[in-house]
Length: 354
Image 1: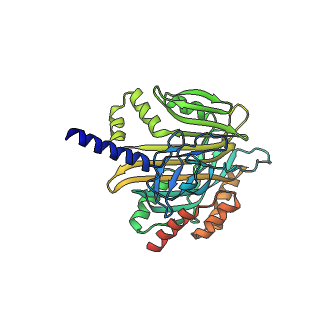
Image 2: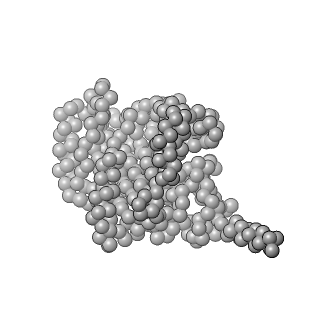
Image 3: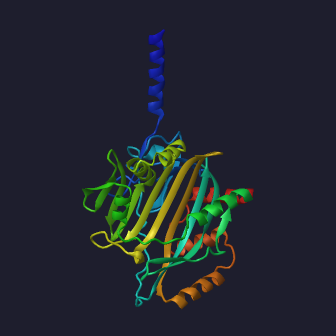
């Protein structure tokens, strides 16, 4: 009887192994791309690739969409893949260099997109523009107000209020002082940095690799499993209360940042290009996923009066909420990758339910 049961269990496990379709998402150099979202044709999230760009199973989906903030999205037939590999092309996104003489403030205008999923189903989408400035002398951020140009898409007002508040809480349009970002990450989370290949390094805890730094085409891209970094810091610093809370919620936080850099990988505030924050945790209604993507679309040097006038000018220019078509037109005009058709259909579906 026991032998028969073991054979049956083995057969089931073999069946699962055979049916599971593992994929790996890579760049043009064959390196795995971490934290790529794999979606179904109707916009539900199947899963997210690990630090090596791998996802163990697409859960029976025949066609999938691979999307990442720093790469062009790609829809593929799973059966057509060679060894389960999906190759994504780098966006090559950039902002034109500032050619005017430096003034006290650096101004950066950002375009942002926000997604909220519950149990892998899209529940909220918002896009819009933020004006921001930094006092270069005092290294002080002066965040502009969230403009009325934003567009909200959600099926119920309660959902809109909840996630709209989170957009403000996490400052979707905030630019960052990117100088010495790599060293700051390494020191803050007690990580080591190892050379992997020319122009490629990796972040490590004491036991595992949790992030990469890739330099190519005059740009640096940092990708890190920030959730693991935070929990490793909690462990090293013996903050057991916060560590336990994160573990109980199966907390996950992934972070990507792209900026222009010199040959040594150094940058400064003018060189911000884009970033993405992606949180997941267990909540009252299931598994929550909250994603913010922010792209720099304009920058300039201003004095204090010019910065004040700029905020007024933008508030007038973008005084009305925009449709999805208008928001996507802004994205296209600034070389930001368009929403993939899968995501667009899911967003339009939210609007219809409202």
